[in-house]
Amino acid sequence: MFHRLMALIHKEIIQFSRDRVLLGFSLLGPMLQIILLGRAIGQDIQDIPIAVVDYDLSPLSREIITALDNTSELVVAYFPDNLEQARDLINRGDAMGIVVIPPGFMEDTRSTTETAQLQVIIDGVSWMIASRTLGAAQGAVQSLVDDVLVDADLPSRGGIRVHPEALFNQTLDFRPDSITSQLGLITFEITTLVAVMGIVREREIGTIEMLTITPLRQLEIIAGKAITPLIIGIIDFLIMLAVTQVVFEVPFRGSFAVLFGLTILYLACEISYALLISTIARSQQQATTVVFVWAMLAMTLSGYLVPITTLPLALQRVSWAIPLQHYLTIVRGVMLKGANITALWPDALAILFLTLVMTFVSTRTLRRVIE
Image (cartoon, rainbow, N blue to C red; front, side, top):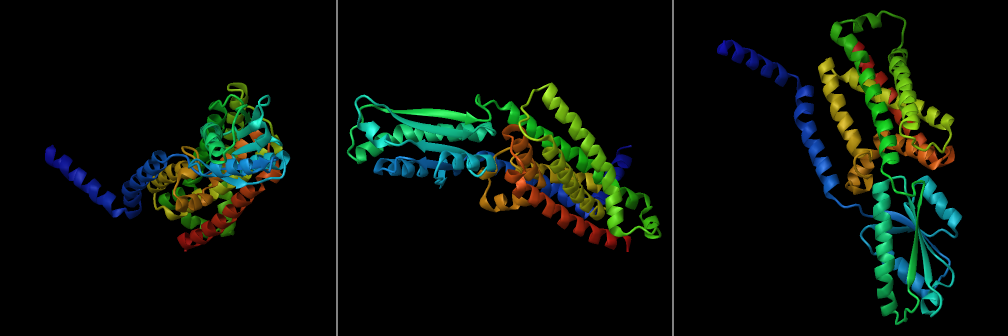
């Protein structure tokens, strides 16, 4: 019995080692995943972009801006002329916070009757980044302003009061961000798993050759294989969206039509990625393994687990090709911020571009498989 069992194990190992695609993804995929997660989780959140609205335009206000920019957590990236322009930056996701320095701020620091006021407005959608932004801004304003006053030889009599405000999530509750992220992730997983079996199943059971004698073109075959997972993905999305509203009462501040239309575009993009994997894989086992690794990479590089800003710069650029990253921005923007298409068009355009590219590549790869 022992020898028979060892012979079977030996056979399985040889068979597994000959499948280079499966072997590579099984061994290198987890290693790459733990490296990416370890680097991302081990790094602090830094270089959070903020905007400063300086109505005072005094030497002290300029020193405060420098002090904010010198913190490791914050980067003063924008100097809008007014608060309305600054809020537009938050709505588009360009800035995560606003520091408003009111007129007469420097004079109020010298007053014995007035208290200098500062307002810190943060984007509360991502509670993790929002908490760090608020803490860093408050710390910089409270501690560094005293240093600035000392360096500038300005007596501080009235003190400085910071007024924090969290947009879209006043209590900084983690559930709205977490549940909307789950909505995007589960939609991605279900759709990809269904779509990836389209071509590889035909190839494994030997019916792929039958498609060559039909009048269908490669693009039509890709479209036909994409319709079923698209329908399933839409149904799953609608069911989960209803759960977020009825069970968890997640705010929905935007347009359902915008979210639904961009969701269809996103599903088409993920299906094109899955069909590319399906045309490359030689078996359903290979396809499932590749999809598993792809899902892990997408979770890491999309901002689902950790903010993208914590990743190395090279990985931040690679993350642009991850559709889930753009879709999470869209879901959070529409549901939690009430964003319209004018604020979401960069992510929508990126998804459209990735869809066209991956559909073209899938069609070319399918041609090679059939031939």
